[in-house]
Image (cartoon, rainbow, N blue to C red; front, side):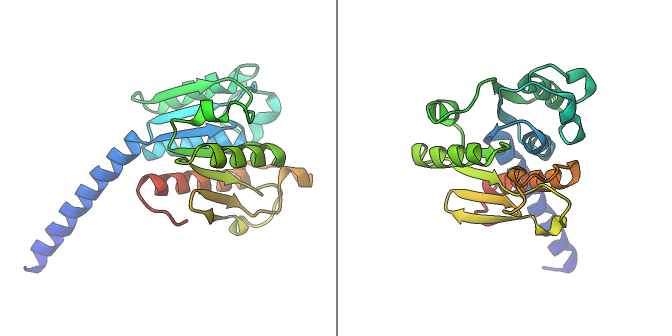
Length: 212
């Protein structure tokens, strides 16, 4: 095989891989629990990367204080985050299949809410809520894979944010130190870095990679 034939073969293989990736991303089911700075940015990253089936879960409304780091606009103030985010994502592409649940997640409804999902991105603010969802999902849903965020507040270097594989079905993104409970400010830049980590890990899992 000469050099030109090798180049053509690599281009063909790359095209085949791209089509396979697009198909996998388009068919995958991803849930996002919590649609604040972390969750709304995860949703945008997933949709722009080719994920079409999303399940958005949050009970809160958009507040003016959210606009410094969350993917909402002034016109969304007072509206449920599930409704506002769904509309924004559908403006990016028209072939999305988005389901929403405007409810508070509790140990009693985790299985009902997320029982048909492949991947769950945890994006709550409070440590106790995060722990509850992760522990309940992993114990009640034996097939689901969970990607969670922990430690994205303050102005520390973004290089301290990373993703670790905690177990075969659990991945943790963040610096694991500077959480909301630390009293540090949440800023768009650092929160979006952590959101990017979570979204990227979800994408890798969809494509068959099980390491960060």
